[in-house]
Amino acid sequence: QVHAVESGGGLVHPGGSLRLSCAASGSIFSINAMGWYRQAPGKQRELVARITSGGGTNYADSVKGRFTISRDNAKNTVYLQMNSLNPEDTAVYLCNVNVRSGGSASFSYWGRGTQVTVSS
Image (tube, rainbow, N blue to C red; front, side, top):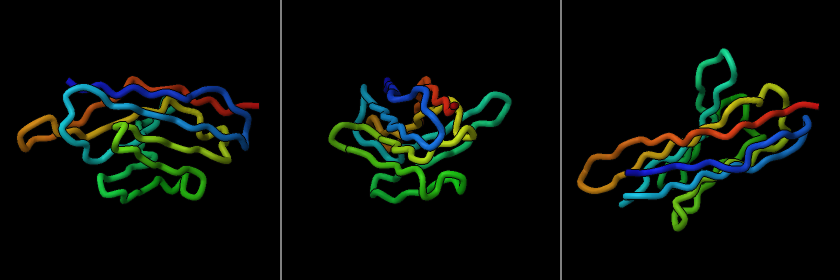
């Protein structure tokens, strides 16, 4: 079993910054892609940013230039640095990790999410 636990959410004023962390633990042989998604009330879950095992990244257009995803493979942790936040960034942010526990198959695991609220 693999667990992914997010931290770092909170309330921030427009223009402010937050750094989210997501640590994976459990039966982990290797981690492939790691990603951040978000879901606002009444909206579908959307990809925010994703990083591959090789360090390749992709971002939603709405966050390009403001958010940066990174990972620490030694700690099985992925980060999301969020700058220039605006109220449209308000959502629950969820971590997703694609993990190989043994053998050739890999599986995706979700964290429970951390709330980010941008408001004056």
